[in-house]
Image 1 (cartoon, helix red, strand yellow):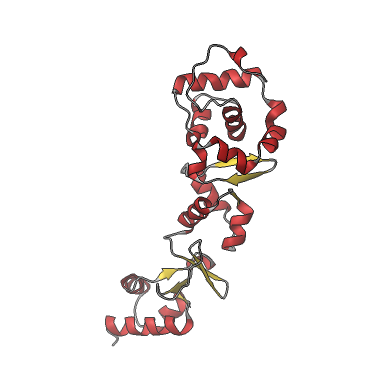
Image 2 (cartoon, helix red, strand yellow):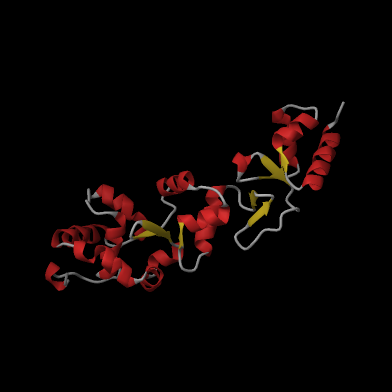
Length: 227
């Protein structure tokens, strides 16, 4: 009968030989239940693949992670972060000029529609829409107007929304500014729901950026602003 020590030796030997091994293959090799095997894998701190539905494991001293914390072995992807959600956040934060979903998917070699939706619901993503696609930007950029404009290009924003801004849009946004006192870009979606604004998040950010509403100032009238 295999002891825990025996099982751990067998598991480690398998992984060192193959670099990455299917969980199901290990289960069929050692004489224990899936639950016990998961405890064993936790004991030796194995990493689980973020590709192939998390069906592969490797040992922490095998991967040679790149600058994004990613390592591939025969198209099997591993990350030094605990899950794909954290990995996506790290990739966005590491990008200097923002990054699109297609570019993230190219790096990860998987589709990330579900992960993006989860992160949006958790309000952990910052993005700006240009044309038909979003550019995901680092957290530090959300509070830096110059960096935001540099990333997306002021001309592109103007072309997309410039002709659509109306007096009623501006009045609605000014009311939010006066009510909240301070603009926080990460809360735009929440404010749209809170104040029942009929303005897309990207357009709301454009108005705030264009008229510098995120800077501390007093507003005497709407006439101060030129549409």
